[in-house]
Length: 337
Image (cartoon, rainbow, N blue to C red; front, top):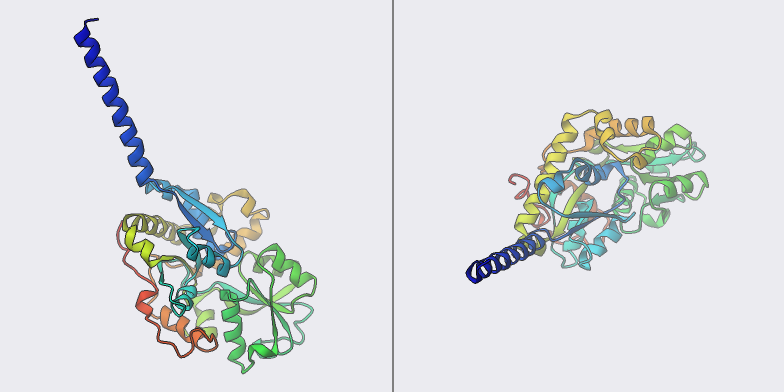
């Protein structure tokens, strides 16, 4: 091997190594991990989070996404504000509440055009609690104090002239802990979602008192559509990570289209087995939940006003305050890749 050839070979190897390192650095820069906190990942209202991962849509966008679960949305919100996570899958109403506290947070994809929440009354209390007009002196379960379930509970009771001082709200979480609270008689009624609703109906431990899984039921209870589950981020993050925000939104919009073009059975087949230990029950719960989801991830036109009306009715941090609703959500990212 001539000295000249040896020198050229070394240059080629060195160049290749530098190119490889540069490429790896570019991938690392572009593939920065996005951590999303979900306010109870097994709840069907938050189905799009895990389903997007299962369908491979995050990877299709070149995103490295980690999903974490926090049973109450208010705790997920705190993780976002602390900078521990980049996004939250939780209720849109948190963005309004946070604006009054000087925090600029906005929903960039809307999953639920309605809350998907159901007020369940225990079978033991069903004789005395026939509507929200009967909750005086009762103990009502919510996922967490300051959570969306507590907002809605207070509004529904308030519609019947019953202030929150006349009943007790007990934070009982979701899923198994909610079911245990009903079975043990620690709560007379409570607000929860699928698949917990179907599980309680199947076991006979509770009955539906107020159903907000459909547009019709939600309009009857709240007077309009009430955007619930959504993907929200700090506005500063959306402004400084427009490419990532657009990719995230695009992945989720694909999932919303998948949900709206497939049956409950087909959707369930994509979900992990540990989400559906009782598969027939899970499919039944999913069928009951499908009407809640948006088709395109965009905010319903009357949604923000309805949510503001509900929060303004009782929430002291919102009541009487000027809220710039346009800053609490954007459809900017759902229309483009």
